[in-house]
Amino acid sequence: QVQLVESGGGLVQPGGSLRLSCAASGLTFSIYDVSWYRQGPGQERELVATLTSAGGSTNYGESVKGRFTISRDNDKKTVYLQMNSLKPEDTAVYFCNAARYRFQYWGQGTQVTVSS
Image: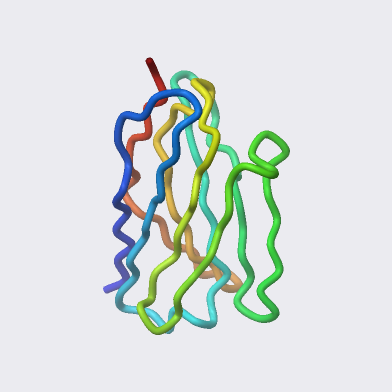
């Protein structure tokens, strides 16, 4: 079956960096658009970044533009989220998502906490 497994979350000080990874299995990873979403305490899930399968187009949420970078390695079936200049408001559970037409898959999430 399809699995998406996130890793790389943790506790980081404001201004610090983290890189999240999401390893996929059970699907033809290269044909899927991949995204990162996040859900903070008491908040709705929001889109962080998307990277399309073809052409490599990206889209970022306004609050992370210029600080976060999404990338993928199709050979490793992995999507990454490089997060720089982290702020306390970036604290959330981060989820990866793979989507193609009506097919959509989610990981279980990884906690990112930004605090001094």
